[in-house]
Image (cartoon, rainbow, N blue to C red; front, side, top):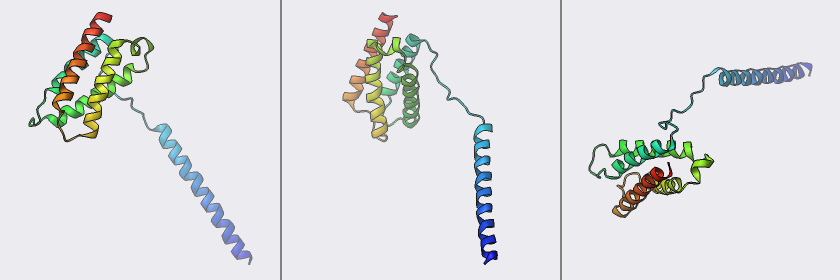
Length: 145
């Protein structure tokens, strides 16, 4: 009877010790391991970044469905859109401007198509809309600066 109790107590002790050891190792690994901040393509100059993004995305809109680089262009465009929105969405002086809201509308439309219809090219109506909104945002940002 006492042997069973001793084995049971020993098993509980080993399990607790093992769980503490594993927890300590995991916490140490998280603390010691280096963290890397995501690299952004944005310079921080809203006007310059907006014009750069507009030019890059206008080129992406013109990519044909037969182009061998279409997947690479799609990925680069999504990355650029994410960087731009992440950089400027929470900036009070920027996110209330007409140029930003127009850009955000165009970027949401483009990113939405790329994410939902990854294998399909941009439809002509969407291309026309994107070109119009991107051009308008470019004009507005130049006027606002």
